[in-house]
Each structure stands twice: as structure tokens, then as C-alpha cells.
Length: 374
Image (cartoon, rainbow, N blue to C red):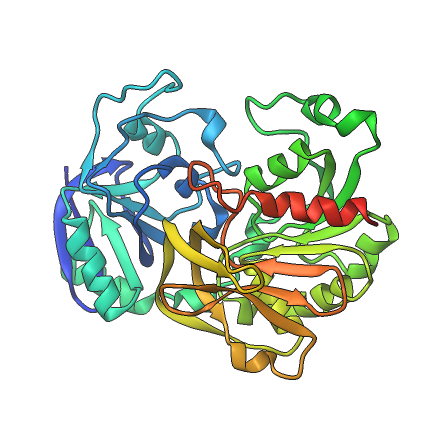
């Protein structure tokens, strides 16, 4: 079946349909990772976005429930050069095509995804649509009449609705936390403000002996503090942090309560807002698994996995108790913050990325070490 990809600047790519038929609109972005298509599709940070994968062959190792990073596909659509028809991997339980059909994901293959990536790098990310139903002019009219990505609050629909203790995802051992608990000691209790958390964040903390409770995004700080957890974490999530003003006071109160606090991606950006800094939209974002990040204190460079379209403006940090701890070596943007007095830090990249580089996984150990010290 013929399919079209149309961008709001009038650019058109023709191809063939993959996944479900129909029409899907969203912000067109690209990711340069060679693997991890299922994790990306189910990453809540891709909510409202049409995901383009620049690696030319996608789906070659199939899919498995173990690789889902949330309970549903979050991306608005998928664009690939070629979809593998016959996957080969001992973990595979099906094809990416079947997975997309089951999850009603509209996609297109046969697109020169590297030319598309160059287009977005030059013009910047923009609204687009993938369709098997409409002509290019009809799609362009729909795109221009639709909402801008930055005007939508995607977080509320991705957050849990009530406090939920992480007990594992599909395929996880429900008693994993007990037998991995260090030397039989009581687990650290971590209160995680869920803005669109990935399973592997909670899994990584659990593996280090923590009991993680995910809280709804609109939970007041006082309600979380009343449960007296050992520490706090603000999760990643989708959308423009400047739209989430209802979270700024919560993040500020949790950050200044004196207990350890870690913030990832959107949580990092909101920490900046909580202390008076601003964020700005990147031209085409950072999405891939090979971004070099430098720790300014140690000089160590880590290769990181990233997925964000906004960054903290370092100018707004002047006169605040936050200092820049990490920078991106590609463009110099802020990749980490540290409070100069309190046990609070944040990172823009994703230490939980799986598959992906594991250089930064130790940051979970840093956070748990802070919990050990009380």
C-alpha cells in the first residue's frame, strides 16, 4: 500500500505502508541509533512525535515484550528505509511489522531516511504526517491546521494515576528486588515523580536494592514528603518543560527538603526552572546513542544515549545554587547540574538506555550511594 510522509514546509517523501493503515500527525524527529527501535517506540519521551530511524535496516532482530519501556507504544509514527521481513534472534517473539499492527502504529518504508535527517538538521524539526489515506496537499492542510508540538502537555496522559510500587514489567521477576537486595538490608525507598518514566529506570534502581514508588505528576510535594522516603527522583518525559509550570514548585520543594534527589532529562530541565533558569528548543534535538558528554569535575568523557529537544540555558543559572556539572562536547549544551550545598544532581542524558552505551549507568550507583549516607 502506498504511503506518504509530508512535512509542514511542503517536503514530501513517497514510500510504502508498514504497520497499520491510516493517518498520524506529530513532530518529525530522527534518531541515529543502530538498535533499540522497540525501546524508542515505547519511550514516553517520543509521545507526539513521528520517529525517523536513520539506520537503513530496521526490525532485523524482531521484538519481545521484555524490551517495552512502557505499557504502550508512545511514538506517533515510524519512518524507516527498509523494514526487515524475517527477523533472526533467539529472543524474538515476532516481527516489527506485526508489533506495529497490534499497536496501531502508522509507518512508512522506502524513504531515504538520511536525506530526511539532513533536511531536519537544516530546517529544524517540524510538524509532519504519515498517511495511507490522503494526498500531499490534503495532508499539508491538516498539518497546518493542527496544534504545535510545544503547545501540548503530554505528561499528564503518560503519568501513573495513583502511587504505584514498581513490581517489574512483562517478563521481570516479581521478587527480583528481594533477592537482589544487598546483604538482606532493608531497601531504600525512592519516591519517583512520574512524568513519563521508562521501565529501565525503575528496574535499574530496583537492581541496586531500592523500592521505587511512582507518583502521579500532579502530586503535591507535601504528599510525597509525608511518606518519608529516603530520596526522590524526577523522571524523564515528553514535551516542552516551559509548559509544565504546575511542576516547578513541586520540584523546588523536593530539591530543598534536604534528602538526596536525582533528575533525568525532563526532570533535569525542570530542576533548572525550579531555580530560575530557562530552557530553549534545540534546532533538531539530541537523539541517538553516541553523544559525548564531559564531566567537568573529573574530565571524564562518557558516550551517552540521548532523547531530548530542549536544553537548559546556562545564563539563567548565574546567581543560583546550581552549577553546570556536565556539557555536551558536540555543541556545548548543558548536560548536568549539581546543587552546591544539597545532595541534588541532574543529568540531561539517559543512563538507563538499553540497548545503548553503559558508560553512565554508574550514576544510579552514585544516587544509591547518597541514599546510603542518608
